[in-house]
Structures are given as structure tokens and as C-alpha cells.
Figure 1: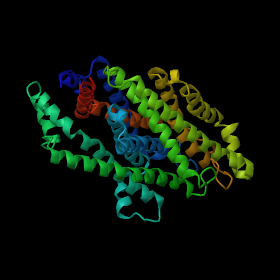
Figure 2: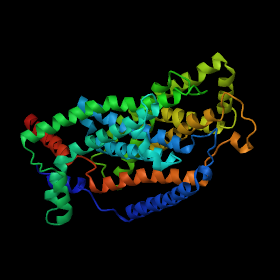
Figure 3: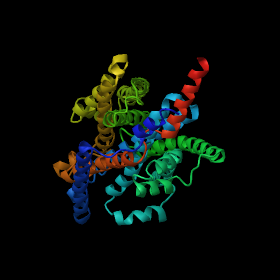
Length: 438
């Protein structure tokens, strides 16, 4: 193939430039600050947070739900695209897989951060009761994490073998590691057959695992009989919301990587147009579920539900609520319905709005409900009537988001962002078709 050398130079992992180094150092600093805050939280206890007997699930659980949501679409999108053999997927799938792996790792870590006694984590596995939805989460998160890692790793085998040869003279140590990771890949027909069957099997496994992960997450809320959570709509509501968060995150990361590594030749406006259509579809579905979630309780007029809705629509949480609905859903829908709105830069701006709205949406799912228990709040400090994260909570939360971004950054540094072997095969096939026609 005449363009193979150019392809390899374009798609092989590249060293960070000055901006990349600054970015990595900045993320590391945020993580260190979060670790310091967490150590202080472990020493002093949850007293350093603003969580209390009522707001017992604070920003940590909001963050957990956000990470779980973000991990969902990457793997599900990849699985569906792989199974349907969509040709346009090639430059996108690996980025989606990397995001999913980073998000699900941080989801598991965030649960540990929320525990007042992290030393008792092992008890969840030893003494867990299957009657509890929390144990269902404990089972499904490691399972989903393992499948996500396999879905990322197996398609990388041919590329690792290519990088082993590519760096053999210039970077022998790196070449050695790529060789070990390639598992002696030679590209034989037998290896290709096993790899394709394995990827197909993993893709089939991860779809039900992803739906189970989101549904169990929703059941954690809906089985508690709390105002705002007591709904049979929660499973579908969480899945549709996860689609919005995941696709929004995918668009944002794809844009940054494309810009940083000058991959405009491989990730084109066509790919953004496809992702834009996908994002607007998920936003429309989620907007429908939001209307269903809030409009029906308004008509039924139960006292507790109306109080909860009033706080969201016109009360203490109204600014956040309307930002999530208008900024995180309606504006992106309007912009992305037009072809010009699905160009890379407008798509990037809309994806940031969607991701920000998705994060605050998880906060709105968790906090207002906890502040409206069935029994009136009385005989407690005034501060218990409200909740907003403390500086410790913010530092730790920002650190977890930074850690997810750092995982993505490190993987992007050492893993081919766009599949080298598959792209080469597609270009060769395209050349053959052109020659045949001519």
C-alpha cells in the first residue's frame, strides 16, 4: 500500500507537545489536591462534608451516576457499530472505548470515596445480601469494567504488533512492551478468526451488561419509595439520560483529539454529522422522558410530589433545573437539527453544554429528593434543610473528573487513537475498488 508509511506516522502514538505537558500537569495537580482532601476526610470523618442525616447522598453519588452514565454509551455504541459493521465507525470506536473504560473505573472508585468507612469495602463482597440492589451494583460494575477492558484490548492486538515493529530501532523499550501486549500477533488467518469471534462475543455480552448496569443503578433509587424516585419510569429514564451524557462526552473528546493530533483527514465533518444526528436523537428521547417524569406527577397532584416539583421548577433548585432542560437539552436539539450546527466546532460547544447539563442533572436527581422526606424535617439545625457540597467534596469531585481525563490522556498517548490495521485495510480495499472500476 503506497500510503502506508504516511498512515503509520499519522496514527502512531505521538509525544505530548507543550500544551499536552501543561494539560497533564494541571490534571495531576487537581488529583493531588483531591487526594489531600480525601485523606483529611478519612481522618476527620464525613463531618468535613455537608452531608447529613437527610442529604446522606451528596455530590459523590451524583458523580457516580454521571460516570456510570458516561461509560454506558461508549461501549454500547461501539458494540452496536461493530455488530452492524458500519463502515464510518472506524475512527470513532477506539475513542469511545477509552472513554468507557476511564468512566467505569472512576465510577467504582467514586463509590469507595463515598463510604464513611472505606476499610469496610471488603464486607460488601463477603457479607453482601442479594436482596439489596447495592449488591447488584457491586456485582455488575466489576463485570462491566472487565468486559469494557476486553472490548478495548482485543481490537488493539494487530496495532500493538505494528507498533512493535515501528519502534524496534528508535524506541526499543517501548517496542518490547508493545510486543508483550500484542500476544505474539502475526496476523495469521487463525488469529484473525479467533480475534473476530472474540470481539463479536464481547460485543454481544456488553449490550445486556450495559443495560443491566443502568437499570440496577436506577433501581437503587426507585426501590427506596422516595418522592421523585418512586417511579417505574426510572430504568428507561436512566438509560436515555446515559445516552445523552455518553454521546456528549464522546463528541467533546473526539473534537479535542482531532484538533490536538491534526487528524482532520481521518475524523472528518462526515463523522461529526453522524454523531450530531445521534446526539440530537438521544436528546429528543431524553427530553420526552423528562416531560413524562415531571408532567404526570403534576397532574396527579399528590402533595409530596407537588412540593418536590415546585422546588425544582420555581424554588431553590429552579436555576439548575432550567439550565439542565433548556441549556442541556433544548438548545442542543435546536442547533443540531440544522446541518451547520453539526459542523465540528458548533458540535463541540453543544457537547460541552450537554455534558455540563448531564452532570448537574444527576445532582438534581439525588439532592432535592433527599431534602423532602415523608416526615417533616424538625428539631435539627437549619443547615440540614439545605445541601450544597463543601470544599472537601468539590476538591474530591473535581479530582475524580480530572483522574478520568488523565486516564483518557495516558491511553491516548500510548494507544493508537484510530485503528491502524483496520484503516490500512479499508484504504487498500478502496484503492482496489477504484482500480477495478477504472
